[in-house]
Length: 206
Image (cartoon, rainbow, N blue to C red):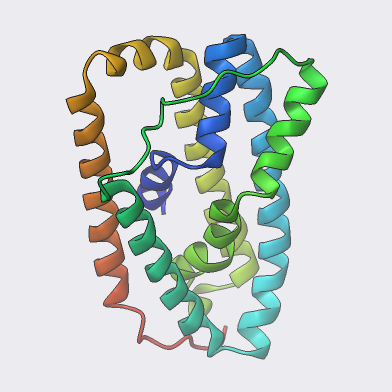
């Protein structure tokens, strides 16, 4: 789960583009405040998904296979997004006007709540790592969600702190940006293949 979360947070998406843009245009403090908002959004998703998973696996166990399959498809999609020739670099961020800390937090929260990447991850990816026979699906969901949030916040905080330097470095070295896309896309594709081999395994009652 930690590896999958790491690969996903390193894949360009609305959250990272927004956080990097804020950090470059308004400073590191603004980026970190925005990150607090996106972290709160993850907590909202985790709570909703964790409560729902317990009901889903008890009432309709066969949906477990469908969720796993959806997660594999989503990982394959992310791999393609990273590998396609016209893919956008993480640090190709646009400038934004200066906003208050309250608005930065609110925008970070809204950006994450409206981020389909976050929604699909909690509804389709995390369930792949849950074993109903190993105990409470809800407890496992919260544990895995906590791992995802910890990885996401740690990586994004590091990127925010170094955003300006990284953007300048990559701007002068486009080849490095291309290799970053290829490595990330290849690893995502590998994880998708490995998880696809387990899709057919049915969920057993807790």
